[in-house]
Structure formats: C-alpha cells, structure tokens
Length: 81
Length: 419
Image (cartoon, rainbow over all chains, first blue to last red; front, side, top):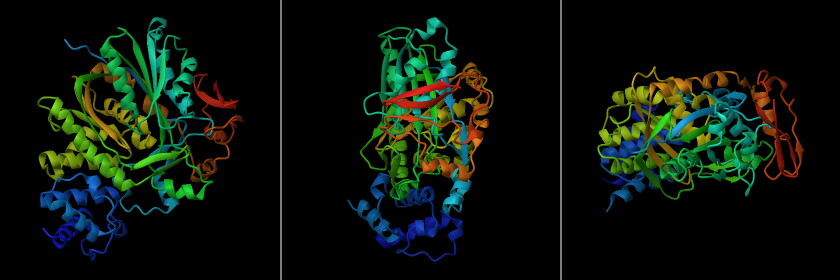
C-alpha cells in the first residue's frame, strides 16, 4: 500500500474515531492535534490503521511525524521489507 | 506446595487537599472537547508542610498501629519507592524508621524507576519472602510521590503544562508477609517488557518534562509486551478469561481505557461493544480512587488495586486480579494475584474513601497561591520553618495526634510533628 493509500486509511479512521470531523475537510498536511484529536484518540487511529493494513510495529517507532502525510510515509517505510 | 506470600495489610493516603481538574483545565485554557473521556475528576495537592516522608508515614501508620509488639519486631525491611526523593544519599526509609517505631534490625533503602517503583518494591519483598532467608519476616513497602509545580519559573511552566492536570500526590503502604490476607501474589506469574525511551522524566527536583504522545505509545507497547511475556511463562493464560478484574498503572483513566482497548483488539479482535462492557466490568472499579487523587506515580497501580478490591460488589469467592505496572524510561510488568472475601472486608475497614472525602477542596486561587511556592521546601534546603497557617481551612481538625506534618528543617535534617 503506498503512502497516499495509507493516509486515506488514516483519514477514514480519524473520521470514525472522532465523529465531529465527519464532514470536515482533512488533508495530508493536517496535524491530528490541530484537528482537535486528543492523544488517546491519536493512538487509537494509528492502531486501527495498522490493523487495517496488517502491519505489526511498536508504537514508539511511529512517534515524531508532524502531520498525516509524514505519518503515512513513516508507516509506509515500516511496511517495506 | 508453593508458599503463599503477598500483601498482608494495605493503606492509602491521599492528602488533605484536592483540586477540581476540569476547573483547572478551564483556567489554563486547555482545549479538551471530550474531557469526560479522560476519566479524571480531582487531584490531590500537597501543602508546603507535607512531603514524601509525611505522606509515606501517614499511609503506613494505620498498618503499624494494628500490629502487636511481636509482629512489629518482625518488620525487617523497609523499601520506599519514589521519584520524589529529598536527598541523593539518605533514603526516605531512614526517616520512616523512627516515626513508625520500627526495630533496629531492619534493612532500609529506596528504589526508583518512575511509576514502576512500587512494583520494584513489591517484587523485591516477594522474593525476599519466598527466599526464606528469614522465615516469618515482614516487609514494609511504601510508595510515596508528590508532584510540585513551580509558577515562579516561566520556562518550567512550558515543560510541565502537559502533566499538570493529571499529576497528583499519594502514598500507598503495604505490609508484605507469608500471611497475605489482602492480596496473595501468584508466585512465578509475571512478565516484563523494557526498553530505553525518553518519554517523561524529572530532570530537576521541582519539574517534570515529557511527551504525552510518546509516553502513551511506550505504555501501549509495554502493556502488549509485558502481557505476552506473562503468557509465555504462565501456561494457558488468557487476557480475557484468566482475570476476574484488572488494575493498571493509571496516569489518568483514559490511558487505561486506551490500553485495554488496544489489547482486546490485538489479542481477540473484540468488537467495540464487547470492549466497552469488559472495561466497565473489569477495570472501572480500579479508577475509584485514582480519579480523585490524580497520578500518584510509584503507587498508582496500588491505588488502582485498592479501588478494585474495595469497590467491586461484595465478593463471595476468591477472585484473580491481573496487574499492569509501567514506569517511564521505561520498564513494565504484568503480574497477578488473588483476593478473598475476607481480604476485601479487611481493606474496606481502612475507610479509604472516607479519608478522601475529608480533604479540603482548594479553589483555583488557593492552588495558584501554593504554586507560587515561596513556602515550599526546595530540594537541598538547609534550614526552614514551615507555616501551618498558609491556608488555615486546610489544616485537619480531628487527627488525634496521628497525622504527621513537616515542621522544620535544621541543618538539612527534616523535623516532623504529629497533629
């Protein structure tokens, strides 16, 4: 799955986890914190995304990205053997 | 037959003053649209004349008072567990020793590993008891932690802003022995998960720094890893079926709920309704005291355990409780034990909720006045005299000479008094 497809999954999980954002435009340049997603919700979104794409990786290795696009890039990099 | 060891008696001390956490968040202008999901209500605030020693002694004294002279003579080790130490060399346990009239043939020391410290203390005690080097001995393990924030330093405020709402104060005293009336540890049933990470720390005596996201991620990784190690050691262990109840280290309730959800998804692909129902049944009781004290660090898991034992419906049979301990930096452990109907009655007799009820609810103005900190005894203070009237309404009215406070510091030596 390429980074664009991963960010699509992330955005879908953001909307599922925080229903208030259902109709809110969300792009790869957005940071989840700026959208009002709290730290617990952010972790749940990442866990649900990893489960969807079938990737097992320690959560701490996904710490650091500044926005959804960077996070998708990081997950994509972990996915590639 | 394997020897039974564990917690013979237990008490929790949650201070004399509390603060409404939602009011604090509003005052700080923190945007928390779904605050209720964080499962926080109040936090304990330590007064300037309270310190990790007074907290520890106030937790332990009711246990010591219940002992006969013969039993007291068998308290052969005191382990203080803390990240709020008051000296680099002298351990808090040396202060506890005379204040609790403990015997001189006693091993005194202190352990540190952030919020995992209480479990270090408990496991050291358990292994000393199982080792049978002194049959019949008792070990006093006391967790004691206080978060003190200082408004005086604007740079520090940025550092600790993230943790101010959740950081509380509290002490848990546990007497461990081969008569584990309250909680019998499942011998050999444990799992560890540890790795180096800079998630939260105390780089100075009065400040905390950290990254909430990274800490949450490390906690989740550890919960998963420690349970897997437990399951590797314990044949047939099943997260869903082996434990009647669960108690986790609780920085705040929302984090516990997140970790539980994570494990239930990962291990069983459980659906959200099942996860929520399971959380309500097996974990909700564990939040009873922590949601009122805030994160008490080294003792937080044991505050959760006390909540589980005391606030579940009256037990008719022994139940097994699964425990998850996590300390930043990081080290973690999943282990377990059992509590009987008698154990539940004994702990309920300590009237923990009554003591929390008696705390004085501070206003935001009173809290901020304390934060200015000109009354607080800073690390390394040589001489000081404490003002008991700083907020007169807070002073406990009916302690009957059984409540300890810090009176003065003379040549670095802390002097305490009973009120």
